[in-house]
Length: 206
Image (cartoon, rainbow, N blue to C red; front, side):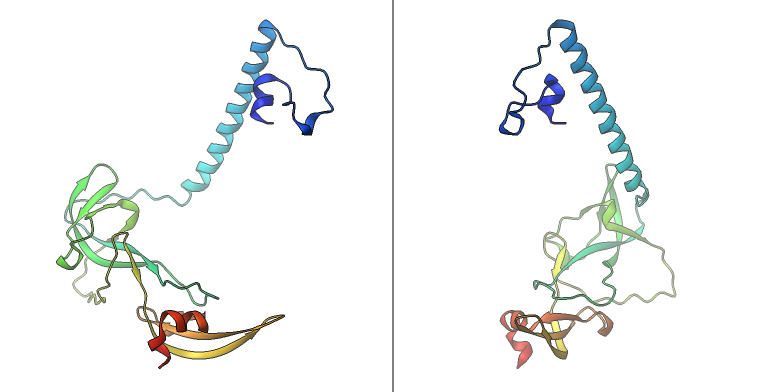
């Protein structure tokens, strides 16, 4: 029901409800009682809905906690700057690091020891952006340094055009190119519109 109907026990006099000519008269205790019952019912149903949504969220929530000196990976966001026409391959979240935790800030934030190349980025991050790294002497970690923006995102750069294709629609044809990106494998190459790629990356077609 609408909030007006819940509070006053009758529908709002609008063009939708012109059929109700007479107005319902509520006086004294009857009005208070019905309003109290309506508010109680609304609160119960809202509590039920919130509890149901919380149960869905708790299934994917993990309680993470780190200590000073732990090594963690830092989650970053990928921004290609072009609208994808189609996706192919598993585009999993990407992480950089590992970095050492130097300080715990409150219950859910940590300060990381970032390199000098990331000095313009604020060094305190929420626990949801961190993944624990278990040190192992046999691990050889090699990763390419990416230029991160202040919002922890970086722009991907195309490297090569692998294939070309023309997609036929009902009334037109769209030229597509399969693009290999700098930090992705060949299996993760994506199909993009050729006109958009030419406008944004003209050097790619020389």
